[in-house]
Image (cartoon, rainbow, N blue to C red; front, top):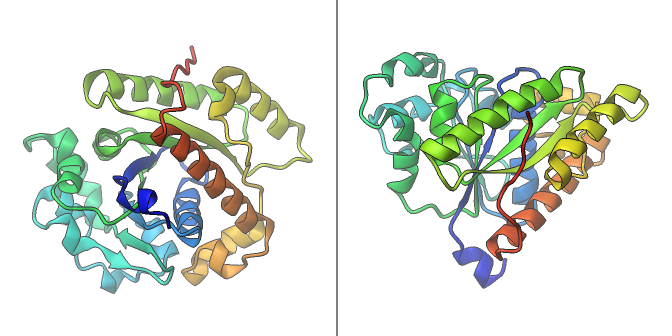
Length: 277
């Protein structure tokens, strides 16, 4: 790792889609793993009450003694919740089911939208990237992630109504940018469950590229049974079967993310001007 890379501040990227079942957590776990495999120091924050990202990285329920719930409630510092994983250079802040009640509990707290941002700002982060796996909703937990982030990565399933849902998400991101977090940008959109034999997948890709141009990553994550099997073994697909098409797709996605991030750091990327009506 170069000296310049080691000294840059951690880039915080939320992985967001209000629709469930689009490969959001799968993307969070495997992109984090692929970035770590590329030599980056990565922290994955599990902000979903289901805790699937924690499970997918082999963190047992018993090992989740301090979670994102305690961090958001202010009971614990973020540093006390960080757990190492079997992947070198990758750590996780796990989630617990108690996080499901945080939406209501946070409502009356001071700076309720900035609880995660304040927790992240309160410690020195020895990481190059912080990825946040958000719940499948646009509630207060996701709002905390957006207020803490520099950018948003959107996994999007290749289906008929996908662009409509993406339009709603983009409007939410724009509102957060205007009123709560002016640095927030869309880092990119990645198509998941892509089947090149299916005309619908190609049509969805064409529609997204028409509206978002180069915000759409060249890499698409294919439908792959090995990706689906990996979480049941508590492993990212890159550890479960590195040679399978799904694992290789996440390796390529990580390369694209790093390239885009370096362009942003160098000031070579124009501000986000994406618009969907």
